[in-house]
Length: 140
Image 1 (spheres, helix red, strand yellow):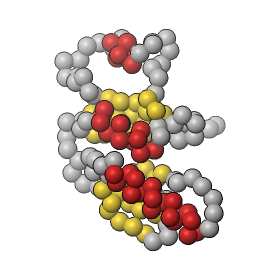
Image 2 (tube, one colour):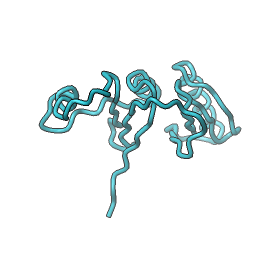
Image 3 (cartoon, helix red, strand yellow):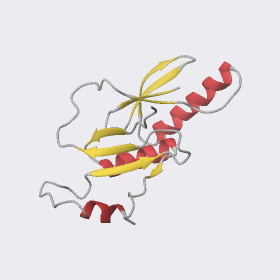
Image 4 (cartoon, helix red, strand yellow):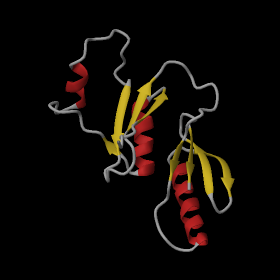
């Protein structure tokens, strides 16, 4: 049986971090589940929690339906060490290994311009970056 995988990323500020991933990787806001017409309606259907924050979650999906959905969940605890699971993003395109590497490096530079930080580069293969909250991901 095939199952769908969704990812949840703990973070301090879901809305700006989701905006980063939308700009960096072409993800879009996930529509609310039926029968709700807005995410606010869906959230309001749950019992009120005095600990909830207005910015406690953001939901994204791949518009082509290939990548997993991503939920950005607000947590109060800061990130203290490397997370054992990270995201790998593959840069599309064909061509020679040199052309592929040039596309990867260009994508890494564009994403750095959005607020990512380069952590490492493995020549000809992939670049390790950190998002604005320090979560590591690879671009290859």
